[in-house]
Length: 120
Image (cartoon, rainbow, N blue to C red; front, side, top):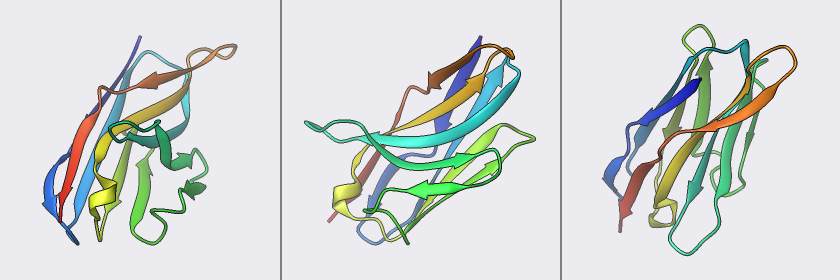
């Protein structure tokens, strides 16, 4: 199967920076895309940033210019560099890997989530 593990969350002050890391491992054919989502208390989970195999990226409007997603295809890892953090960035951040498990099957796999808290 496929495992997705995040790390790097924590508490940071307004305007600070954090870097989240996510690694996918297990038995699969390839990873099509990797993404970061977040979910704040009482809100729906939302897409923060996504990166595809050809390094195309897309960001939520709320994080453009502050967050950067990058990927190491050889290591099946994705990073999210978060700068100029705001209290409204406080949420549990989840890593998603869209995986081609076999040449006929694709599935989504999620990490357990990592808490990011930004104090004002």
